[in-house]
Length: 216
Length: 216
DNA sequence: ATTATCTATAGATCTATAGATAATGC
DNA sequence: ATTATCTATAGATCTATAGATAATGC
Image 1 (cartoon, rainbow over the protein chains, first blue to last red):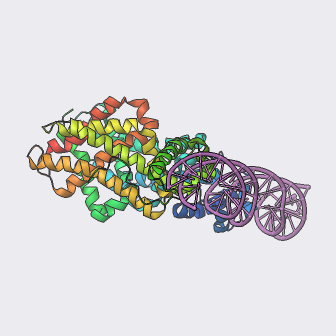
Image 2: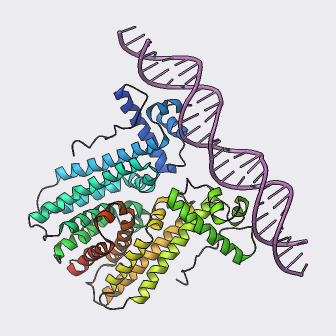
Image 3: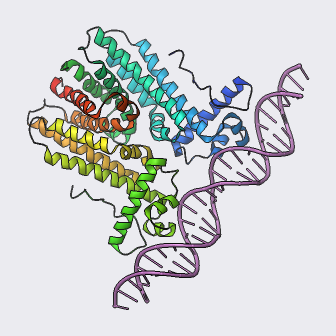
């Protein structure tokens, strides 16, 4: 678990020795690429555009990465780090009491709302990653879902939720994760019919419905 | 609503006069392209590969389409037609009674299970479509979600579900749609931990929980 | 004569690197 | 001397079309 708030990338080779410089330049690259990828997609963005927007020459860009896919991995990883950071921070703030689940859901959905384009990007481009890095990105997803699992398990243990089978808790955690994402990948419809606050309210009712029902 | 079971594509220009031939060749193109796109993605599939797998020359391919994006649109539309067909057929079979919602959910989730790769493809490549066709594809999504809305609305009117606000019914219909998709785009995790039958059972409990709870 | 199909290729990219140049530190 | 950066380009594609050829129907 450790400190995951900063990027956990250590395995992309670089020609440059100075670690601080590598971190600085890669941050430039990520910031430039994320905008371009959101705008035109990974495949329609060229390495030259990434270099230009990063303030590097094409030659320098390739001192910090080995391939265009490397940039995509850096971007995906940075996005997940930011989401996880946002959720963990919310977790600190929210109380431990009865309604902590609703609070966590609310904060998480607001993170999704804020990171709309970024989450969409991950849905669209994860499959463009080489298998090894795709797996790393999927691990990130699992870890974020795991946060909700822990919250649910604690409430269930405390008797503040009906006792639920572990498998069911696991699935509800995935549902929460995905219903947050849904606000981004169905935004073309939802944002025309709901405000984010209404969306959060209704989805909380939906999710908590099962818990109150106690049918399992 | 008319007959949506066959493709509703009429607007892609072709050089070929014979309408039957156009339909035949486009079916070849779709069948070839869907396999290639699933395997390597839209951008990494070349038009030559599509032509070869369709049994056409590259020149002939371009008699039936105007651009590579046309092929993607044909593919997305064909996939949605098949999904909608599957759901509508299930709707015919299921009774009108108490448990029709659970039955429809079950059949829809089985369609998602069967069309796993196809649904994933739509999630990944819809954004690669020119805006006009992307909108058409999104309309397809809305229409499929609309089927669930109707089922929910009928049950709510009949008093077989608690009376729910229309906005809430609409949202639940989207949730059903997306929780079916979730089986495909989280398959890398879910299929390792659940069998499809367990997934359907638990998600039905989850979805119906809100209805039984009657908290709204 | 018209329609459908094919081959050959124009024209336009795009990724990644080689080799030269500038900046830094001993 | 070492490290970081740049310019110029090799090499490899890939989409889409022009123009030639074959098949069909009057």
